[in-house]
Amino acid sequence: MSNKPLRLAVVVQHPIHYHLPLYRAMADDPDIEVEVLFMQRAWSESGFDPEVGIVVDWGAPMFDGYAYRTFRNVSPRRDGEGFWKFINPGLVWRVLTGAYDAVYVHGNNHLSHVLCMLATRLGGKRLIFRTISYNLGERRRGTRLARAVVYRLLYKLPHVCLAIGTYNRQYFRDFGVPETRLGHAPHIVDNDFFTAEAERLKDKTAALKAEFGIAPDESVILFPAKFMEKKQPLRLIEAFCRAGLGDGWALLMVGEGALRPAAEALAARHPDKKIIFAGFLDQSRISRGYAVGEIVALPSAYQETWGLVINEALNFGCAVIVSDRVACGPDLVADACGLIVPWDDTDALAEALRRLTGDAALRRRFQEQARARIKRWSVDNYMAGLREALGLSPTPRDAG
Image 1: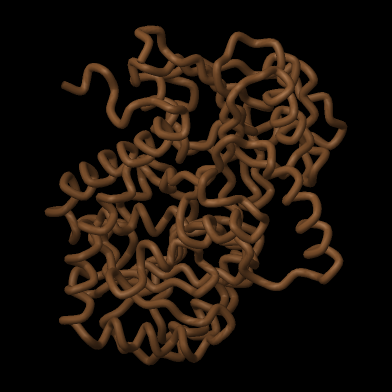
Image 2: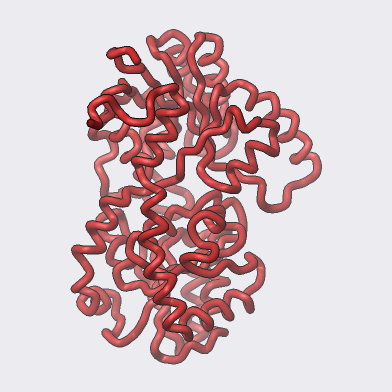
């Protein structure tokens, strides 16, 4: 291998706090000279996130520790949604003409993604592609046919497609990507940060519960997600109320979004149940929720293409309940760390709550296995997959 680092461009929409450890790991790799190319500085130019209805500050430095450029987005829909949200002529030109050996494009749901994929191949560079999509859930027949045609053509462009897990790998297979062009780069969070937080907070449970208005002897079921239709917070509240868990269990709802008023109204109809709304907690505070949680529930209905809050929860040794539309289920949950229920069955969700709260031995077994399972979904394993896709040796030159 040459002593000269491989020059890599990473094309992404905007900074996302979950991805920052990956960019910094690339920057720390002596065999990679990385530059992250952003289509915009945030999901909207103002930083407003329509899914939660507030300007979101994740409590993490978004641009530290790696080289980056931000390009002008000329789309008239740049604060909206859809394929035309990102149109970045300067970005496409940079990908086409920049002195890169390889380009890593994350996603294909906007025009700039597709143009950058084409520009990479036209510029004679190696194209690495990653998306977190899956094919679970129903789509109209016309949509399925259109996707089949367009994606089978589009996915011929990458030299390597990086799969994040079981459902995502099947997604690529469904659109004709052969195993010879499939790699693996697991969907991860910063395990080091969350395990350190778990250690720091482990002897403060009673005080943390008090901050949320929970008694020291009460156990906690945690919902750490946006209050939006696909996350199904109302279904979870209804299941919690049906489950009849008694006074020993509280439901802690962490997040914001359009459905919060409806969720609070539903909870108010069950004054005998302890349901607490904590609001949005950034990365410096969400650990307090996990630290008090015995069980974490994510009953999403659609487009839950992974569920990174489950990664976070496993670092705290939480048992979990997820729906069968949460894509991390086969990889992180099944037969190891929790229960999987049908996404549209409130009674099944209530029964899962009863089973896991009522069987302390089962709950402890899931909790004990959680930290062991999540160790395999790490930044190091992600970097191993990326290095293989780039044609680099398994470990960096200075690894010993």
